[in-house]
Amino acid sequence: MWYHKPVINEELLQSLPNLKVVASSGVGIDHLDLKLLFSYGVKVSNTPFIVSTDTADMGMALLLASSRRLVEGHAMAVSPDTEHFPADWLGVEVSGATLGIVGMGTIGYKVAERAKAFEMKILYHNRNQRIKEEESAVGAVYCRKIDDLLLQSDFVLLAVNLTPQTHKLIGRRELELMKPTATLINISRGMVVDQGALVEALQNKVIKAAALDVTDPEPLPRDHPLLKLKNVIITPHIGSATKKTRWVMMEEMAESIEAALADLPVPRQVL
Amino acid sequence: IGKKVQAIYLWWHKPVINKELLQSLPNLKVIATSGVGMDHLDLKLVASFGVKMANAPHAVSSSTADAGMALLLASARRLVEAHNISISPSLEYYEAEMLGVKVAGATLGIIGMGSIGYKIALRAKAFEMNILYHNRTQRKVQEEQAVGATYCKKIDNLLQQADFVVLVVSLTPQTHKLIGKRELELMKPTATLINISRGAVVDQEALVAALRTGVIRAAALDVTCPEPLPRDHPLLKLKNVIITPHLGIKTDKATYMITEEAVENILAALNGLPLPSEVLPS
Image (cartoon, rainbow over all chains, first blue to last red):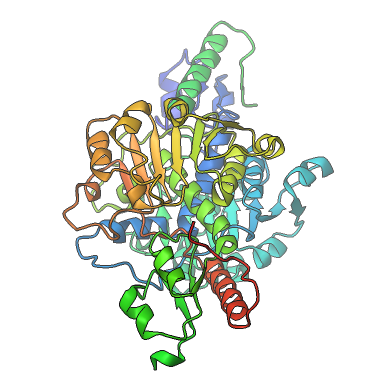
């Protein structure tokens, strides 16, 4: 299964009586009806860890690009209309700023490791607090209440998986808690954010900017307001899109499939 | 009015400091520049008028290092291309292959390991990059170990091994066109050149040729020669090039700190005290 295709539904499963395994690319499994699959005796695997580093890198790439207005800057630098670079054109400083990581799993933690090198102050919100040594290693402070993180962060990065609990986790209320100078970065799933509320917040300067590797749907309809906002960077879900990582992902998926077909324990099985 | 001027704060290399200006300002004591580069000033000329010069080295290093990393990541992950595809009115290219280069485990070659270069090394280490550096002088062992950087006495060794080459030198007669056809050909065909120093450190024509023919994979340039480039310049049309408008120090915080540093230097000069960051003609 590559990029959530084909769609697995009852019809498909009924038409494939000998289906033993679905190997899904990437870590997210929100697109799979696990109950349904298991009821047909089909095993499921994903590729959880290999994507972490590239996805964390993408999060930082979006954070930096947004803060320094890199996409806008490039457009200005290559525009046929540009005669000189304005002297008062400024971005936001990353070094020393506060990063709030929502979802401190493998990917979130790797983001923290990277952000620390930029001398960022790191806050995090997670279902569970990490152990002291892990927190100290990256200088991260736990925020049991997401509100505390939202109130203090200059950059809010979403690295949760999509579950019923994280669906529309960031809505109008959360956006209004954020600083008007803050940036939202989403490398999780489009549906973790209330997209309508995000559009309003960006249009009304409730927050400063957004950088999204994921949207709902992907791609967005061509007339969607997010496509037109100057303070938004959108990338086509390329968090794990490097040659090396994709190669390993395919190897891992093939491995999982072979194991399932041989009735052996399936590496990276999703239970 | 010329007799009243005792200090000049140069903002973005303006006004141009030449003989006429210096002659018209007999009481000028100090010129403070907004940044760290001094290549736009004729140091000997200014000194010959008894005028002191200062830059703002401390204020620039973090923001410039950040900009360097921003360009490295944007280029590696094809961020600008990807954004343009995502917002394009046509979905024709949406499914197209948008694979980038993995940064973790890749080798970064830093040319110029001053304050800015070193801050880049600190950041790159957190991205699990292998770090090589070339500098006029080798850094102390502890400094090297702190960032896991290996010294390359010969620039060629760095160029041959690096997946990403970042230029962080100041522009001097020695670094003018430091990266030319020969150096570009030494680089890997999969390598990326990032320039956050000065446009003139690179032989721009050689760079265009190298990018067109796949001698190197891509370039990301915060600086060019001139700035901005003429609108018909080939660099503007290459798909594997990101250009930014010399934004290395252009953040709210950095510009504030730069101005603070400049004011400190100006006040010191006017009060006959030692300047915190005086620049002498070498």
